[in-house]
Image (cartoon, rainbow, N blue to C red; front, top):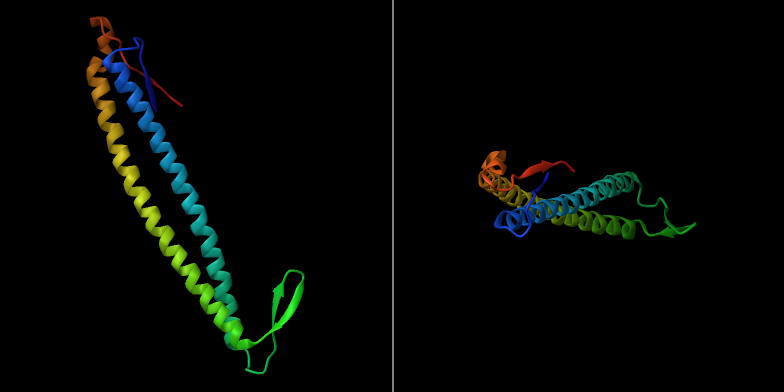
Length: 147
């Protein structure tokens, strides 16, 4: 929700400009948070796939051959090496998920701070405009504009 008013160059104009800038900052944070959610979803998918691979490797006998897909070719791989690679991959994915969840928590906290700022600014702007009645007193009334 952006605000606009009729008389540029006034203190209220500066308040509205700051308000609009803060709303844009909030939208940017939302976009960044959505990107983190997408990354987490991708890592969750990789974690599930790698976990299933680990389970299948654990079911195999020691003498069962293991093949790894490299490009279009299947290449024979030592079963112990395959298990070690899967273990490393799981650790990496879990670490990335923890990192992303921490970043998400930080972005959510940042969003909350900015949301509160927007509420306070909005209240000040509305109070300065007399809640819309200020136009009759010679002050420009703030009007709401939906995006």
